[in-house]
Image (tube, rainbow, N blue to C red):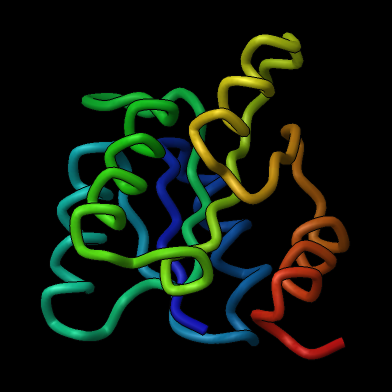
Length: 132
């Protein structure tokens, strides 16, 4: 598994890295624009991300916009269904419209902050990214 963590808070970024460390390579971005560039570069270099964990409130490009751009990129490059990344949207915003927007924008999962390792690993197992 190769993961991209898009999170502007250092502590949250580091915790997510530690949670995922035993499952594969993790790259980090502290803003949405950098995360999108890293996602595109990884695909161009034929080493695509299989998992993207993205914060809903990133600087330079918010999480919803980043999610839309990643899915648009995948569609343009015929990365259909399971060929694209599994995207976990992470937010402290519990409003129904935020959660529904993330799923409309085609996230694969939604976690509330503070996130828990058990919840993240369960998502990875459900998505077939790690073994149970």
